[in-house]
Length: 284
Ligand code: PMP
Image 1 (cartoon, helix red, strand yellow):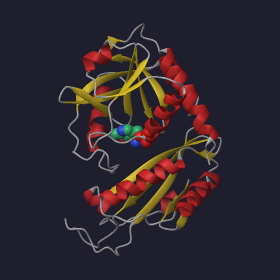
Image 2 (cartoon, protein in one colour):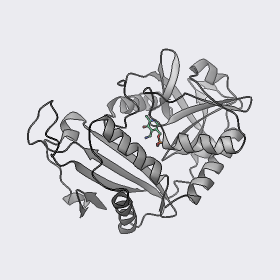
Image 3 (tube, protein in one colour):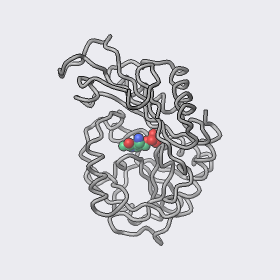
């Protein structure tokens, strides 16, 4: 694999970062994951906007221009011959040369890393036909989940808890309500209405979520942005989740309770179709 590190395109084995990097010792960095279909970048503007916002919230500048970011994405896709896959992008506060809680001076160069993940069959995911099973796990993450930081330990723990319990993923709950999934936004469908938690600092503002809700509104579907409980989700007609890598995937079981017939519902299937069609049209 050829990866990008601070202006260079290198074999992955030659890409090296300091042990003092703030991303490594402090989790002081932000990231984005963007999908590639037909060799083109999906949702580029959305991911770039969120990257800039995450950086700003942490007092960091965006080190590159829109065109520079886009060129790197295209070059990595070409160099690695990606038709379907993901592009991972990370910006950290760089290498202060030692370990210290205080931020280093503003002129410390940030560390910029991008790499591709080849995923043939990303769009034709069999899980779209079978659906996912999830369990609820308390949401013990920090209070700024709207910033897409590389601090992913708790989501990893929740994912491992789900695996240990023999299911696909965890839905995180706080004060009795679902916040989101370990790495996705969550939805239920009741009487044709799509219900999903409203944006706040409690959840990541999913790029897939924003586009999906726009397409759903354009298709005259009803949307209600409010929190829902696990009990309400278990009584729903359907449930699903969204993320850049999953697009839209149905959820058919929550904490052992089967939803409806236990098979993916029509609303999630239709939304997946609409999402893939519309985002492919806009791919760069
Ligand atoms: N919530 C969390 C916690 C996530 O990690 C992700 C995926 N990065 C999402 C939601 C979905 O966001 P997006 O649609 O932008 O991939």
